[in-house]
Length: 439
Image (cartoon, rainbow, N blue to C red; front, side, top):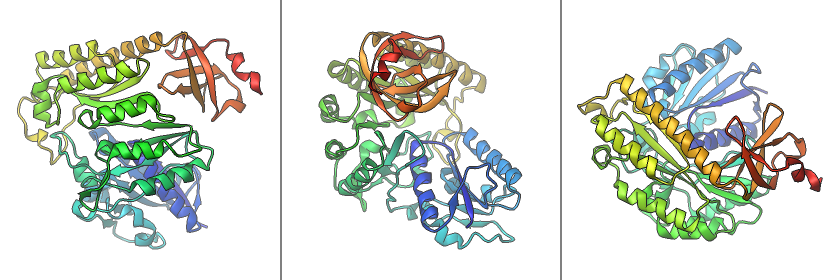
């Protein structure tokens, strides 16, 4: 029985796909093992959102060959689609599979026998036009359920349409079936994931269903306690979706909404499909219905043409917005994007300074949000996340809570009252021992 190990870089979508591919291996009689357990085969699922992700891939290959010098190393994922030749030249790589091939790798690599040349199986991205159902299981307390893939937007900075192809989705009925399978596994929380999930509903190139209808259908699946929307474009987050989540049985009050810039000048240059006024409107709508809702924001600093004045527009916009945290990305040049051809390049030092400013702002925002919720009671899903004798978990509105470690609480949902913010910036539950009274 050959041993196979997996390593995933990047987003929740990659995690859902790695988990599904690993189940395919197990169904064929392979033994799934940890990275350090001298596997015969390594499958490395890559990301290519930033330059750093490419470097990480090279480092992981090097580590794999240290652990198991005679292993067969296969690279899949976004980086594999974008730069198959470049990866094939990394010492120790045996095969590179593109977006259209990765779900067929067991069949295409036929026994994983080493050859003189690195095998490159990466079609043009147009060939990646089918939807491959995927979800993660047994990897974490929560499950990532893939509902959509690819993107039709073509933002100036983004390689994802080149790496994953056009927008396409599974059907609502198939996704509900997957959700029912997940419901039978003791998973308490499902996170919906995709490249552009608000664009859900395109099958065989035609729009057949809507994201709002998927949300309504999933809300009826018995056995799943919580459903979370991972990330949704502001122009696709409709009033109907917000209204529904505010009254839903299972969808939690947490939205992650990419902004990318608080300057309309930069949003236009980026090719985004909204202006800051729409974003402001979405935040106000959410907070009017769910004052305790957590709102996360993606923002890119240092995009070409972002002057000090335009960066300050973003900073001030975010400072005044009722949001809970930021994911800050420092702009990095990506081949074959429109942005790489643009003038007024921002020096790297300045990009890093701006990034630091926004990360400090994010901490202030998170602290303020946590502060506003102290004294309230929420339900925490405790995870196997142990630090200094304390276990951690998240409330429905994504507040990280610390409590005294008790193994029986792992993967359990427990109501707690939020008491204070500790020195690590996490919230402590009032009288944590109260949680344990039902043992």
